[in-house]
Amino acid sequence: MWPWLAWQLNSSPHGAATCPGPFYSLNEARVEDWPTGLQKYITDMKRGENEAKVPYDLVYVCSLVADAFFVMIRGGMACNPRSHLRLIYEGNPMALVVEEAGGLGSTGVGPILDVQPTKVCRQLHPWMTAVGSRLLLPVAGGAQVHERLPVFLGSELDIRELESYGVKYGGVQQLGTKTYQQ
Image (cartoon, rainbow, N blue to C red; front, side):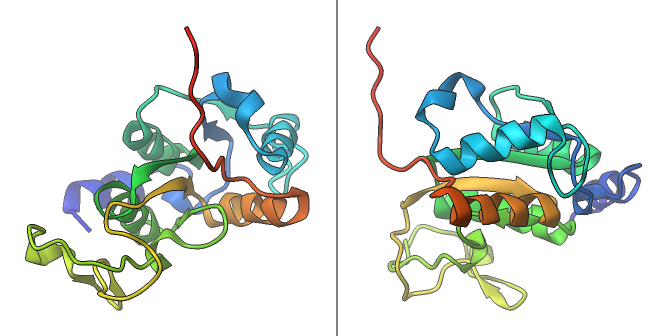
């Protein structure tokens, strides 16, 4: 991990990305579009009806990278439930940083870093081929290089609890594309 980022995370009063709550980042303007599992999870988090037993507060600046950095320092999770971010260019790098800090990056049903693209883009840099034992650009699997996926980043406790709501209440991913009329 980069020295400046490691210093920031290790000097956090909450223990970096390993601590649950008390913050979440999510665009609540789209709450009506969320699946039932995500709506129930966020409602319970706000009330403190969660494993952390603490009410969560919204922190949202409409930049997943900034929001993820905030919750890595202060505790909690940052989410984009829509299939909006690209696996290779956005999902994997952010999940890698969060996981290196002790947190978890998820698609809502499993680890982002376990999603494998089917094609390798020749224009990618060599440093994107492998990190530790996890391949960022494997040549076989079930995803496209430019596949877009939901991204949930944060403490392992928060993300595991989110995934359990998905199983129990019918999903946390906002799949499909919805268009809005002006």
